Amino acid sequence: MHPIPVFRKTSLSVVVPCYNEARTLESCIRRLLDIQDEDLSLEIILVDDKSEDASLTIADSLAAERPEIVVLRHERNRGKGAALRTGFARARCEIVAIQDADLEYNPAELRKLINPILRGDADVVFGSRFLTAEEHRVLFFWHALGNSFLTLLSNMFTDLNLTDMETCYKVMRREILSRIELEEDRFGIEPELTAKLAHLRPKIFEVGISYHGRTYSDGKKIGWKDGFRALYCVLKYNAHKAPTPIQLLIYLFIGTTSALCNLAFFLLFLHLRMELMTAAVTAYFIAAAFNYLQCIAFLFRHKARWSGPKEVLMYILVVVLSAGIDYLFTLWLLLFPGVRPWLAKSIASFLVLMVNFLGRKYLVFYEPPAKPWER
Image (cartoon, rainbow, N blue to C red; front, top):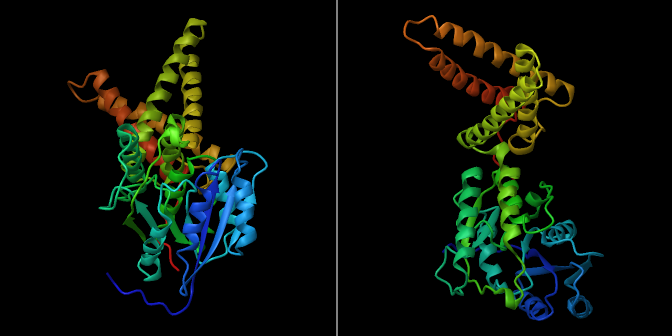
């Protein structure tokens, strides 16, 4: 372990989202206060998310007792992500950490989580429940499997090798946090925050932590709907920055659904007795529009080189170019002896798929690669 050089007092903002945690809230806050010493000062930002129990009363009592505590409140229940956004906006210290009020995570361990930042080795530190020899309550197998799957999926998109993306304990320099605009209201904040931190390419460390998990009878709030939302958030906030092979896989899905859309409308128009060529062309451009909307929704984030009418025109240019390549390449392949139409069309379709993907990635929705974050 490297020694930690301390030349001045370090300040730490701890954001504590709280919803109906009267049973553990006071103990959590007092244990947080205990980590202060002559080298570390705290700002505890407690955000009450319209609790229905005595949480807000306890919070106000603690704030009246200790000047380090700031209490913010929501007028309606909005979720953990919204509470964190409220707390982050109020944070003033050089380092910002998250602490759940339910005491599944031990506040004393925040000291070791900030150590890599104090040494200058890290800009962001994740507290991993799985990279540890610390005590760990044995709970739900399927929850653990779900956490592992979400972490794996997130890593595939962010190109990180985290062991615990869903952890509450994320500690970061405030100047990094100030460059991120968060959107999620509920537990989707975890994959969103991980994605947006990864896009800035800071130095990220993991530190093993203990974990005293709760059951639903103890008051645990995350549910299966949040798991599906997390899947969506991994895709939504990462796809536009994901490695090219991952983006190609997503585009294969988009291309497949667009092809099915093309076929469905073509058959519909024929059923309505539309002329063959008119039906084919109309169906093709409807499918192209569907493809465009899917690219914006699921793959490229629409904040790139082009915008508005220019982007649509560029997209149409790529579609027309692809159609021309498909037609001409198919005819050219048919000039070779022994090449059957189905083979020529299959090869041309694969080429056009790649042209479509590359055209969208590098022409229509191009985003320059991110530069490593520098202090």
